[in-house]
Image (cartoon, rainbow, N blue to C red; front, side, top):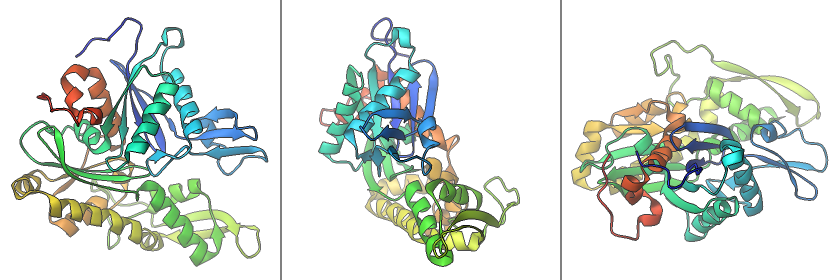
Length: 359
């Protein structure tokens, strides 16, 4: 493991996600996991960040706004993102020793040069002395324990909050990749839209997410058992929202079949991204993928029936990675811990000749 570059400096890795931001501190592991939400007052001053700010979503009084600085995996509000990063970095690092850390941040593989610059500038403004980027599918593959440095094809599907990253990795590089801005947030939005159209009931993002976790499914048919083979416990969910006609609070029972129908379109978009990546994969690596399968990471990997659906659609084995929620931040953190040997994997080094990478 590489040593700290200077005494008193705590280098960190950041999984800057649309839904949650996780911070990995060198030698300590994941030290922070909070929602990517800020609450600002009428003058634009940030009054809450992270978990405290998320509690205010949909419940803020006049003059206070809860917002997400990142949309679909990229920075939508530069000032809010900078202030959120600054607050979370200070919270993650010991205040008395806080200087200017080297920061490794993961970004979607499909972002533009302007969007990359926005991430780098935000981190520098927040206090980083040095900023390096790593593409999310590479970080996810490292965190999932895939042999990314070996001459074999590894395929990873990382479903986050704002983007789904699908990539084939070999010899320390991304051979082919698809980045689609359809992921956890799109699933929540689809549920909100369905409940509004079918039941004339308005629900918020948090309620939609709760429904997705409780009875969401990607399978074509009802899932009788979960990923561990245990019987499923719930087939319906009691929703509380506001009636569109009367404007009064109302309770409505929603079934698993309804939510499966609501999620059909965004799930199909994820499946098609996997198909396109497989179509573009070199024949030599296709055999490796058939042998070793596809690794699912990210919060979306926990959607019931998704691995089953992908197996049926592609004919390739699909495995949900251990600790899928932390695969990206753990992969980013490994690049922090072993910066000297893994620097060649970072996106910022892609224009330079690749160095040998040992994992």
